[in-house]
Amino acid sequence: MIKAFEDFQQTSKENMDTALKSFGALSKTGQAIAVEMADYSKKAFEDGTAAVEKLFGAKSLDKAIEVQTAYAKTAYEGFVAEATKISELYADFAKEAFKPFEAAVAKAK
Image 1 (cartoon, rainbow, N blue to C red):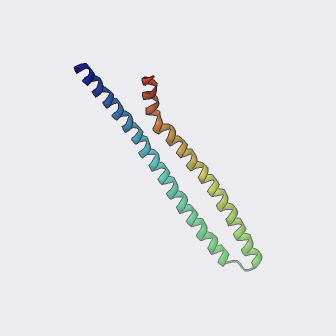
Image 2: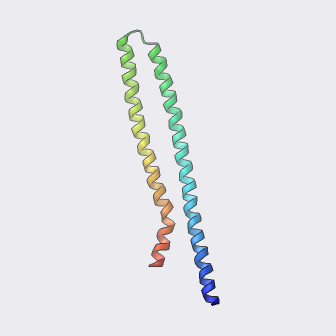
Image 3: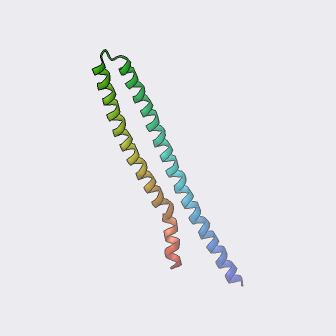
């Protein structure tokens, strides 16, 4: 009976350690995603503000269309790049969060 209790305690401790490692990965990656999104939002706002200033300074309709087209292209390219970065961060998060559980599953087999 004592042996079974000791085994239960050891298993509980291992499970807690695994969960804490997983939560650590969640925290670290969550912070990285939040920082990345904040940086992107700030840059997108600054770029939008600069484009509006250029648009108000345009002397002709052709120049205004040129400014708008350049801004749209830049904004789209920036969005695609940012979406790629964020998807990579989420993929890394999934790998890191489940890595501690892989060891536990392998041990159980």
